[in-house]
Length: 384
Figure: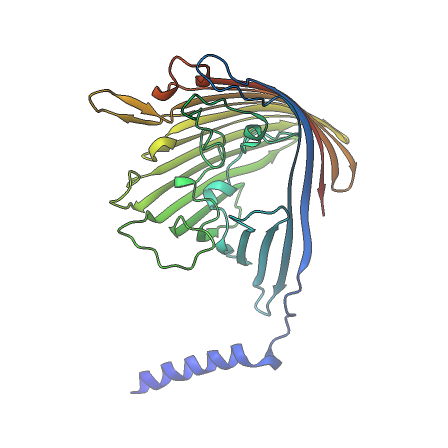
């Protein structure tokens, strides 16, 4: 009985400490408004059809944009622990995901905890070459590249440019992206930092209870990186791995996994890096990607040269007549430049070339099996 009373007293005392307003000196969280806006205009010269492909006209000018408004706030409690929030609103209409990320932050001497809709440690701790125009390692090139279709309306499957190795090394298993998750990051010690993430399922902005018989659930992701200066030289490297622990019996992704790695070196105004990513047991998105790049910065100026090669295996059907669906290869080159006009404001430009090729059975013997585009894009980035 004494132990029960002592335990109850401790619980009540803890509750009084939390509830007593006179004992709390920390200020209530106040939100600040920030974010970014990117506006681009460019010209694309692209394939528009040919033998066995429907004539389509992808050549010409276009204007594209990407903007978000961020609401952030943080306060430090009396015990030294900081608590904050981060909510990111898409500034362009997006019916599928109007709130991009929304999560809670708790940090202190123990490290940092994120809870909510946010990318994993595997994604956030990945290192890849810097680029100064549109993003070659985020799928931006797909927006400036068309893909002709055949008479049945089938063309090269461009799905997977975002969040999978076909177009990016910033990945997570099954393209989980901003699924609800819990992440922990250690303090950085002697250049090293470890991050661990757990996501109940791949859903985003959903409080529905996952059905583990029909959904891929219990995703674990980890990131480890090293970032340190040695005199005037900076060296960085990263490793990431993620896997689905409870694969659905109703899918082909029961043991889906993802891996990425990156390495970079910077000295003076010069920097170079390479990054790699791969998917296994992930259906048609199985494959790999590699990004290499160099850049030079001096004062307000910067120039970067980047390359990306991505492959996805597609799905092979071993029926009497074997077919291959969704297979594709992707190669992109970009020469980009930036100029800082003022605090948080840069003018940017990119000259790029992208080539897509596929051995998809449905595209054989037609010009729809290949697509190429050369594009010149200029724009402005504003952060606030």
